[in-house]
Image 1 (tube, rainbow, N blue to C red):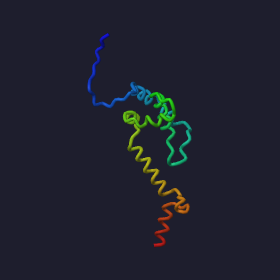
Image 2 (image 1 turned 90 degrees about the vertical axis):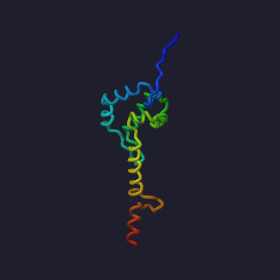
Image 3 (image 1 turned 90 degrees about the horizontal axis):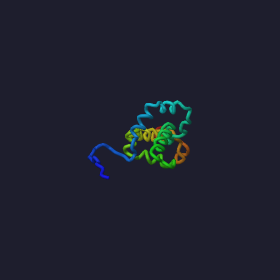
Image 4 (image 1 turned 135 degrees about the vertical axis):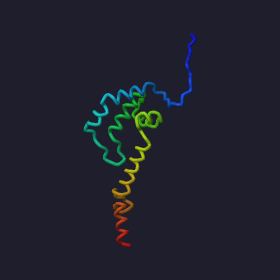
Length: 129
């Protein structure tokens, strides 16, 4: 049995998850994202928490891509093509990290500062100077 395969070079990103574009388009056009966003999901209680919608979307994508364990769900977010398709961006991560840094350095008490917040220490130093 002879088969003719058309093998060509492409500079487009590829991945081993065929049909994912179709799944992504279905998800975006189905309204499921709006339904998930409207659910009374518990919001994270700390600055390190994840948006529950992001967790559910990541889990759905992971199951579609063949994840067999919950631990695999986070690994697939590191796939460059999957990240680009679903909008998992470095810019978004940087914004979240900066928000955490601001909150950690400004509004959280630190045991190393005798339970005070860094801003309180700064104010105390300014008054003593």
